[in-house]
Amino acid sequence: MSAESTPPPGIPEENPGTPGPERARTRGGGGGRRRRPRTPRQRALRAAAWSAAGVVALGGAGLGYLYTRLDGNIASIDIDHMLGSARPANTDDGSQDVLVLGSDSRSGGSNKRLGGGAGEAGARADTAMLVHVHKGRTSASVVSIPRDTLVDRPSCVDRSGQRKPAEKDVMFNSAYSTGGAACTVKTVEAMSGVRVDHFVEVDFTGFRRMVDALGGVEVTTRERISDPESRLRLDAGTHRLSGTQALGLVRTRHGVGDGSDLGRIQLQQAFLKALAEQVKEVGVLSHPKRLYDLADTATRSVTTDEDLGSVTALASFAGGLKDIGPSKLTMTTLPVDYDPDAPNRVLLDEDKAALVWSALRHDKAIPAKAKGSATGHADEVVGSPSRSAASRAAS
Image (cartoon, rainbow, N blue to C red):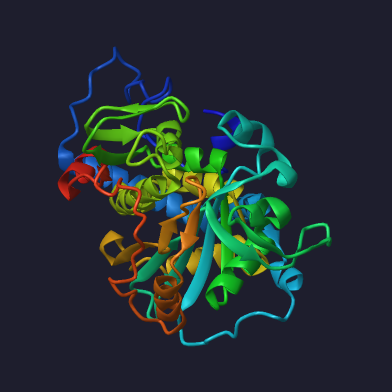
C-alpha cells in the first residue's frame, strides 16, 4: 500500500481477518491443525465486529490524527472578499446553489499528463455545473454550462488581487483561465441572477483517484466509443471503469455524438448519475479503510470556498445531501444554439435560458420546454447498469 493511502492508527485494513505469521499458529502450538471454514453467518459477524472496532477506534486516538490530516488536505479560497458586494441577493428560502468545477489546476504535473496545464495561468475548467439543492434537500437540479458558450464576462479579481477588465463575446471557460474560480462564480452570477452559495473545484488527478478509491464505477455503453485524444476505447456493453477510463469518458468529445462539447456534457451527466448509484451501493460506511481512503483522496482533490474549507463543514454539507439519490437528480444543459459563424462555439438561447435561471431563483423545477436546439446527440450513448448489476459488482 502506498504512503498516500496508509490509514491512520485505529483504522483497520480492508481485510483485517487475513491470517499473518502469528495468526497461523494453532492454540496449542501443535502440528498445524486446519481450521474449519467459517459459515456465512460467522463471516458476517466477523465483518461487523471489525467495522465496529473501526468506529470505536475513530472515537479514540485515531480521531485526532484523522481530523488533522484530512483537514490539512483541503484548499480553500475566500471568494466572498474577491467578489465584493455587487452580487445577486440571497433568497434565504432553504435552497442552496453550488458551482462545481472540474479543472486541471491543483496538481500541475499529474494533471498535465492527463491532458491539462499547470498553474492558474494555464489552467482550464472543462466542466462547470451549477447544482441547485432544493428546499428540504431531497432533490437537486443540475445545470451544465457548456464551456464553449459565448458570454459577456464581467470585470473580476483574480487570486493575486489584480482587477481583470470585462470582456464581451468570450468563451465561458475563459473566465477560469482569466481569474480562477472567483471569476467563474462572478460570471455565472452575472449570467443567471442566481447567488452562488458555495463552489467546489475537483482536479483531474483527484477525480481519477476518487473513482479508484470507490473500486471503479459501472456504466453501460450502448455503442462503441473510440477517442484517441482521450485514449478511451470501449465496446458496447457494461463496463466497470477505472479512474483513468472514467476520466477519459467525461473528457471525450470526438468519439461520441456530433463531436461537440455538448455531447461530452451528456456523458458527464450520465456518469454523475452512475457515480451517485455507485456511492450508494458500494457500502463505504461498512468498510472503514475504504471510507478513510475515499475521504483522504477527496479532501486532497478539492478546492472550496472558505465556508466549506474544513472537514467538519464538508461533512455537514455532504450529510445534508444523503437523501438525494440518482432518481432525484434532474440534469439539464443550459439551452444553447450552434453559432452559425463559428462551428466550435455555441450561443445562449436567451429566452429558454431565462426559464432555467428563473426556476432556480424561485426554487422550482426546470420546465421541460427549456431546451436548446443544440443537443450534442450523445444522450443515449451511456447509462447506469441495472441496480442489481451494480449491487453484484460492488459486493
